[in-house]
Length: 394
Image 1 (cartoon, rainbow, N blue to C red):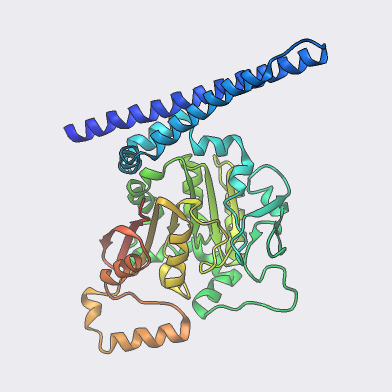
Image 2 (image 1 turned 30 degrees about the horizontal axis):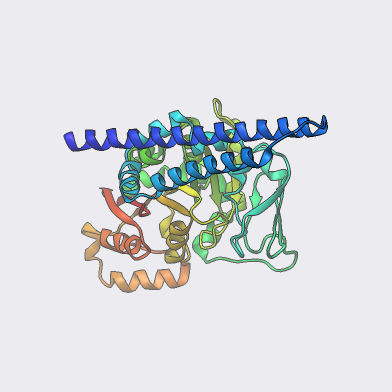
């Protein structure tokens, strides 16, 4: 306990020192600008000025502050303290109070838009649309990649950021496990009995309890942005948005009909803000986000439906910021089910035919996350239900 108190104290010291030096830099820049304006006025009035000495002294002062700040930030001691403290919920809360990245994003919507990238070349997309980042504005937006020149647009409910977006004759088809959820009838029933059935046969605690379970894992990234991958009808997207704990919530799914249901439920929901909440159609194996731009990714009851689970987890690792969190739920067929004859063969055959996956043990999930660079992997079980959490190394 004493060690953490010392760690916290030194962390605060470096933080306030950093802010103090930055303030000196801003003050110095203000003085230089004032002197420059004064000299221009004097020169316009044909008065004698001595700009050389002034510029020399100001330049020396500015270079000294730059070196001091650079030395402090790049010192091994500072970096070690920042790395250790960044995972602390207390520091995350302190940074939010002091007005760090999440507050800058709140004040500048254009900063949030930089997280979206072209799914072809991953270059940041250029926006040409409503400056407000919300459910209502983003479908009216047009985005363009500066590298491949491909344009992306929205429809009535969401942005379409799939690779095949905009094609007129060619169409993308996924395995049966993905195409099933593109059916309007399945999307309609999903939150009207389909998802509730998971609690009966699979031990799923239910959306509200699952949300409470994952909050501890999401504590280090409170105030940042979060993607609700394979959001379905948006039950968790709405919970994330109503919590007020995230600067941006992205409801993401490949199914157009699911996103339509998600949009309708958001409009029907009371006490939910439409701002800082967007709906995006995307492929989990080709996520339209800049590398290291996302604080958290959640995937509820989805891993077993992804056509390429390895590609999906690799993409999640790519877009997560260092220290970013991945939380997902799925089911494991173990316990008494492990005695089913030829279970491995059945699993392989079903996977080849439907594109879905049946997990037989926790070790499969842990090995998957570890292979693609995630750390601090934990699993929580309830019968067949499993919640897995992992983190991208800081």
